[in-house]
Image (cartoon, rainbow, N blue to C red; front, side, top):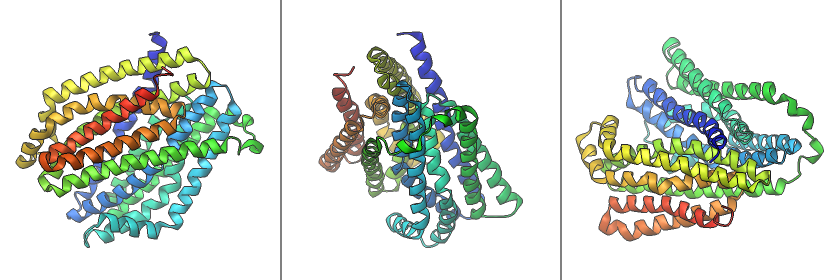
Length: 429
């Protein structure tokens, strides 16, 4: 493989991986701040409200994924007019959705609380946090569009700069408001809100400084050109995300029905999967950018070379994580919890985590490539079939295998996504 292909992959993947890792660190800081306020209800309130925003914004992740693939293809065709139109379209959709969030914030909170069921002592604090942070919806959703557009332009450095800036501002402002001004959960919420808008301002500043030269290419009269494809792609990604959310929520609820110890063990072990995903998502972003650009340019040989190179990197990362989890998995789990019952339970189910990198690697890479070439219908179909397999396997295995059956279903779900996408892409690769 040409060295240049691997270099292009790493230029996109490495900053994306670093950016991904900063996200959970921010959550840890928020928990650490509220964890010293003298009552566990503060932690519960932040956990409940944060979960609502995580799920809501995850569902609208198509704002990032949809624009990245189409932008990369337009860049490959050297169609700079369409490149600028895509950004404007995505921002317009993002701000429209954000406006609905603001207008419907009360019914959204009612519905979310009804589904989650926070305890009476947590509900007032979670409500306070929710109604402050909800005003960051325009910034958060607009950032999805901007980050996706930057990746489509083969630039993952700007998303890293924006993420780090947001996290630093969030930490500094939250600490200042809580410890300097004596605020409680309001201070943490305002820190998050302010950081979201600082992130948006940072993104806009980078956009104008480094891509301002593209402004003359923008044509308002053609803004609705290809709008049907824009919404079809985003619809498919949205429905595919619903499949992923369904599996994730059911995995958690099934563990909860097995008792607090099993729930805790599953939660701890799922962190190992999430850490693996932070790395693989970086290479998926490279698939979006390079796959989309070479596909848009009609360069079949370069497209196939990018795919082969991405899978070589995926194989290396998979081997590394598998070895680490086999050799040091117990040690990693013990760093996350010192509860004897949870450690004992995790020890019984840990071999399933060893299989997760092998089962899931292909799905991550193919997801990135499918987004890049806007083959989102295939991605939706594979996710739907894999989700059906997850529920079917667990329902058949739960009586005899219990939590082992849940992990078996999850591993099969990951593998099925990759297998189906591989079969779909045989003719192109």
